[in-house]
Structures are given as C-alpha cells and as structure tokens.
Length: 319
Image (cartoon, rainbow, N blue to C red; front, side, top):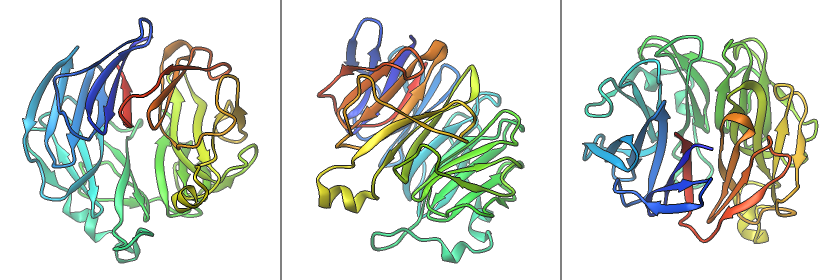
C-alpha cells in the first residue's frame, strides 16, 4: 500500500501502512487540511499558509498568508499543473495557477442566485465551502459543495457558476462525480444523494443507510461506482448530548443505489465520527475516527486498527 499523508490538528504526519512506521513531517506544524494532485500534496493551515510536498518529507512553503479569510477545504487537479482551489468561510472560492504561490478570488461566486439564503446552523450562521472536487469531464473544471448552500460547477476557471441543486438537500458535506460526469454523488446532513444526469436532478437514497448524517465519500480508483461513506445517527449537537456519534461505515457496489454496513474488525458503532476516508489501489481503504486509523485491504470486507493515539486527523491522502 502507498504512503499515507495525514493532515492533523498538530501538523502533517506520514504513515507507512506496510511497516507501521509513523512520523511527523517537516512541513506545517499546526492544524492543516490536505489535497493531492498525483504525487504532489498541498496543505493549508488555519492561518492560510500554503505548503507543497513534492516528495517524501520534502515540503516547501508556497505562501505564508495566502488569503485574509478562514480556509476550510482544499482541492487540486492533477491534469492541470499547479492548479489548486481553496474554499473558505465565509463561503468563497480562490484559485491558484502556480502551485499555491499566488491566489485570485472567484468573485462571481458571491453573485450566485440565492447566495443570500446560504447559512450554517451554529451562530453566527456563516456558510462555508466544505467540498471541492475536480470535474472529471473537463480539465480545470470544478465542483464546489457549500455547507449550507448546495453544489455548484464551473468550467471556466471560476468565472461563471452553474447551480446543481434540484432535489438536493442544501447541507452538502462532500460532492463527487464519476469519470463520465453523469453520475454524481453527494453526502449531506439529510443522507446520501444520487444524480444520474450530471447534477441536473438528485434523489435521496436510503437503501441500507440506516443513519442519515453522511459525511466522507470516496470511490475505489479502479471502479468509480464502488463507493464508501460513513454516517452518524444525528448531526453533531446530538453527538455532544449523547456522548457518541453512533456512526458506521458503508459500502455501495452499484454507484450509490444500495448500501451495506461494513462491520468485520470495526467497532459496533464509532463514538467519534469517521470524518475522512481514502481509497487506494487493490482494495486498500483507510478510515480515520479522531485519533484512530482503521485499514482494510479487501474493499472493506475486513478491517484492523492500524494506529491509535495519534493527533486528531482532519484529512488524508495516499501518494
């Protein structure tokens, strides 16, 4: 299995799944989010420092303070060298064409019809960009998911935006598209949603998903219709009241039409939410729940606890 790079509350770490070796890397040492473009990894910290990793433990600070607002998520397109997207709170999209050294705001994102209705449950109710996914049908194109606001697509470097929200619950956590860009998937605060017409319409899928609060979403690299997600019984306020997220991991082999709970080697339910997952070649799958890493090498049929007691994981990439 490839090297796993983790963005945590205490900086960047590398975990070699074959050997079990775990070590801090010499990149950013504070809370960080990651995105990968092939073997290149990008990182952004809470204070908007952007870093680039071009090899094992080889990090370069690209911009010490890229933007003036709070970074929330990061995306990169391996087909366009140097193209990196940054999503923020308040909800806004920034674009870099030089690997994170300089950034330009996509100002028309603020002009999307209905922008004034976007929100977020906790006060002061500020929406944010939570998901960025490169458009598989258009190099340089991008899908953006707003919590809470919906899904939007741009194919012209963020100059214009198309709203893709008919039938979609607006509390979007992750958005993803098949290589054909016809089949699209979204995890939301009200369950998993499926589109079979490029996002023009969506439907809620509940078959096999007995928990409604879906969060991470990944696809197997060899089969884009082999999907994985994790879902909790309630939104985060319920986790605090109940003392548990009561979460589980699920797999779909038919592009999200039906789901099966995965159990072998996993907790009966996760107290801490499974916030991030990655899928690798040959059935490799990694899930992070707070300070624990679970690994499967057979498409989720069997799992093992690979590492515990690590800093809380926010994002992961396989390189």
